[in-house]
Length: 393
Image (tube, rainbow, N blue to C red; front, side, top):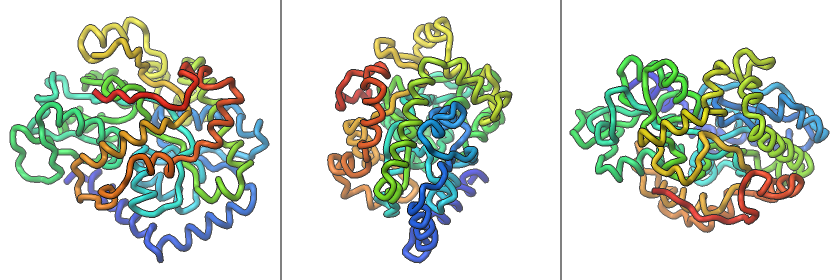
């Protein structure tokens, strides 16, 4: 077992304790106390492009424009750290992997709600230079950022389609088996360069980083497998939504405004988020972030020519910003989670009804108001209706 996998499993045990009746009491009381007053916006984030709307909202002063006080966002290293910070009350606005919110709310009974999407697409499967097909991953190890992630969902879907089986054990691998290991995103590129893994699937800009360092290449973009899928979603505490709705509306308004700005100011967004930016939100270079946020038409065409992009008619951007949480996506996500192989079979998934979850997990009151203020979904390049068809190929 790699050290990264051990650390994250240890963190998951800590999180499980946090959600027990005894362990959850103190943090939940803390959150309840915070909800009684209009305290500051406390953002927690990972240094990935999924966090873009939260960071742009802070940098551009959108929270203050809504009459809210906002502290400097807190950068965290792993998803387990993010969840611990959120549910212990250290932060109150976060971006979480969509399947993580399912696990938190229904597997661990945590009072969290999805209030908007942070972005669409924004992830890829990056492989070693010697890997040319999915079948080449047989008998090797692939890194994922978290068991409950869209990355794991899309990867396992692709591996099933390729006739490969997933395992999470340390046994000797058969030729048609792929071992999955959980690894912090920042550790993935070095692990690929050291040949400790054959591939990783994760949010940007780590795929772009591997390309620029010439230690890996992109085999597929996840948005070319599941069209316009969400990866990270804006997640808030249910008590805040119910006890201070005006504060919650201001938070969502600011983040939706940030998405609208970012989609048309991609070069500025890369500079804002870079290590050389005023706030130094991420450790990434402008060149790395530009490769994700503002790729050149020639580069996009090369992905089509090489077969990395197999659905050019979808016009999928490497990352796109759109806030509405489509119910159809949540329904398909639950169906996919119920087909997946996990380290330990999660019994809570067995009884989940996709239609019910789509209504219960998401509170879309605030995001609908925010979208309307900007002129509707067409302002984000989407059809002006709150339903769509899902394409998972």
